[in-house]
Length: 349
Image 1 (cartoon, rainbow, N blue to C red):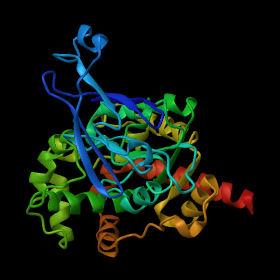
Image 2: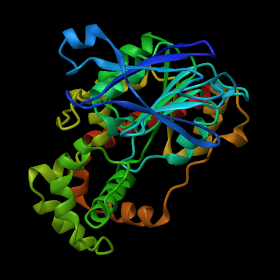
Image 3: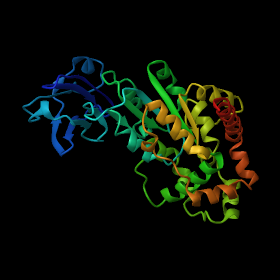
Image 4: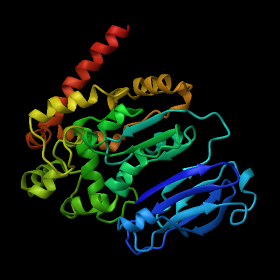
């Protein structure tokens, strides 16, 4: 999906929405703080889109005026979303003080830190969390929105595919997770996904994780011996869901690509370019650094809490040699990153 707003002069808003489906008829959902206002069809011809073969009719442009959106000029909280997926296309500048910065938070947990995303949505004009749900083309389009200087994006994205935007005005942040904690979290969530369809997973994740979801569906996660047996017998597709996910995220261009020892150095190099790096073992320090970057009161930044049940499973995983083999690259990366953090912290003192 491609989208953008090219003009908002108060009286008129013009933009485009090119849907994924070649023959789909796009429309935008317009709302404000009081609720839904209208569904507006995209009826403006973009001949370049038609000639490029991106859409059957080329009718992908939309134009909002006082005619189809009454009192448009005074609707300060107006939002425009894709009528089908409800993906945010545009939001007018915040009336309260907004942060004029382009920030991307690379999510390192399978279960996203929604509290951080929710708070960032209150201080940035454009905010799009869990970006990986929408696919690579849509994610790239979000980075290319050129009419807004106040942007917050987040998602379990492959860092290597988006590093170029670090040189185009985006500042990157991440809260790194503990390898055993993330493995415990993934096993617990994969088991849960077998009975409850997760709303935060996109189609690609559902497909790539389907084998692991089925495999762990009946696992007793309170039985350490059962977990050990499951890890030892797991087929390759299942193993890939748990194999050093952090190293793969920071060093590999494909989420399904296995990591190697050489990728550890590449991951560390990518992490060195981040504005703020935190660790789940010290979320207070992460919140402090983020508040300083954004010039926000620290009380505004949510303090991420570790789940005690998941902590218990992680403690048991630490005793299993098979779990260590799954996480070898992440364990090495985690050691060096925490060591670097300790050195940096001591220099600050």
